Structures are given as structure tokens and as C-alpha cells.
Image (cartoon, rainbow, N blue to C red):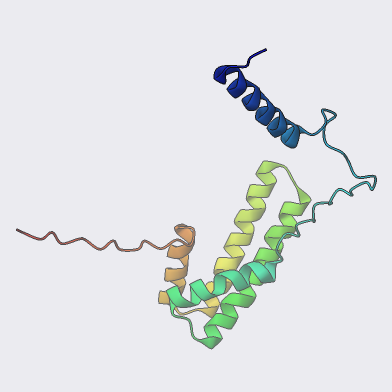
Length: 149
């Protein structure tokens, strides 16, 4: 029995292909599993930030934007910690929407009164402006000058 070149090429290709399949998929029974069971990792509980952490995160921005000195920085920090803590406690209570809104309005009013008493008028107004804009500043965009050729 004579084998021509085409048949020989097909037989070699099938053998190489079969070896490749066997290397990828093993003996057909799927992956072998280890006898030692693997433990599932429990997701770590994410702790919500405390009032102090929230205020500490915002203070560098407020100090820079309002130009606060050390005394004013201390006044703003203690006031904000106090009222952020009250907001957190109110959220934990999970009241009806109307009561929540009233509670937040009352907290805002008390916070603004304390800040007005502790800050100069211009810095207090700047704080209110930042609060109104949700503590985002409008960065001025630089206009690109076009070259005339």
C-alpha cells in the first residue's frame, strides 16, 4: 500500500492536532480538582467614614478656598464635625422623608448660625457660596491662542 504526499500530510496534521487538543483539555474528564477544599474569601465590611474623617477630608480644600487662619480653621472644623455627626445620626434613624427634610433643614440652619458667629462676614459668605455650589469651584478655562500663519 502506497501513501501519497497528501495522505501523509493529513495523517501528520491529525496527529499534531490531536496532541494539541489533548494538551489543552486533558483526558476528557475536565480539570482535576485538588482534594483540599478552597475557602471562599469573605468580603470585608466597608465601614462608613466617621464625621471626623469626612471633615478632615474636606478641610484642606476649605482652608485653601476660604483662606482660613488657624483659629478660623479650628472653628469651622469643630462646627462641621458636630453637624455632620448630627446628619449621620439622622440618617441612621431612617425617618419619613418629610421629617428627614425638616431635620436636615434645622441642622443646616443651626450650622449656618454657628459659622456666622465664628467667621468673618466675607469668609462666611464665601463658605455659603461654596455650600450652594456643593463645594465645587468653577475653574477658569484658559483660552488657547491661535497662531496666525
